[in-house]
Length: 127
Image (tube, rainbow, N blue to C red; front, side, top):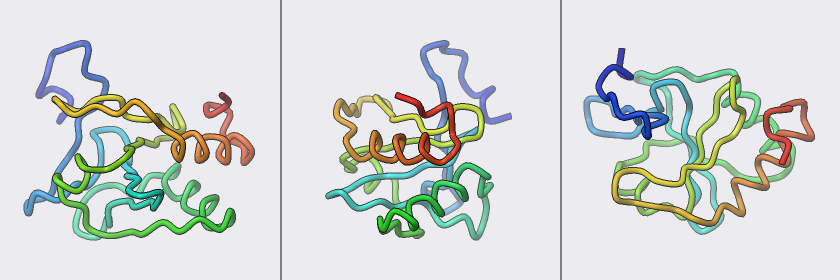
């Protein structure tokens, strides 16, 4: 239903906020942000869907010794992030290149997560 809010074919995904304007997820994905090489994903406690790929990646990330905070994320915090990536069971891990007027062009942490996912049975992440 949320995907019906736009008809621009250049838009791949929309981001969803909760009633307090906190980032929750995409319309068909979960979201991770990277700031100063630290990973964070929204807490899915009040709304949203904790997808199977999100759960799988959180386990992979922990097994690799990488910290990932599960907490509230404001829109401003997300847009100020060094990287943002999306996850779902159809495409694995997908770095975000642009969100409105904000753009990202380097994805070292996202690529590392993609490599870890590919090594852990997520063929969509083979790069």
